[in-house]
Length: 273
Image 1 (cartoon, rainbow, N blue to C red):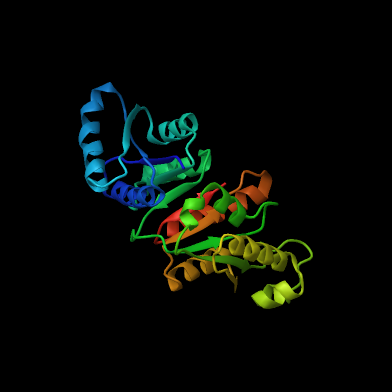
Image 2: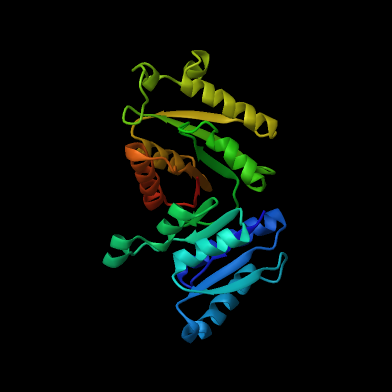
């Protein structure tokens, strides 16, 4: 796995470094730590930022590679990810956005929208990843769980518990979904072979093949509210959501939901396109 960690030397970047160090040690890989400066006149600022990254990683393996790029942070992070063919990007998220940032979009948001690979927004309490909440909408032909475990198998190795959550919501229900299905339990959906039930059964099979104990779960209500509630009540270490590159109103709706989840979540979020 090729891992890219972006840091600007700020407190929220520390979260990205700590999480990146933990994942790198677990995977036994040498990650790349990138900082972006405006131009050559600012190069002296890069040295202490990268020195701090080395301190966070400590003397224990793995080592890390460091890079400096010139330009705008989001654009250069994306360019590095594309050129280096990374499998995962980790960035921090600043909470006290000013007016300009809210209007133009944060670096993290712009990276999410254009990254060629999954992105983790490191935030909240950073610790070992033992409990993962994966929110699979079933909006694409290949389930999010399948894509996640195929592209990032390291994150589900060992003593990891994966809960696959489906939210049954009238707001995002497809045509032909009966009202009873919006209130049904996990067992009822699987037994009746509904579209959600078949997706749940598929996810169970994927987890079983990986020798993981399947924990499918259904919640009923508004998508964002239920995902946030489940993440907090289950005390998960990482929340995995999808984002889509479709067209029209459906793309806008789904991407808006993803952005709301990222903004309101109080723990690390992985966004997989």
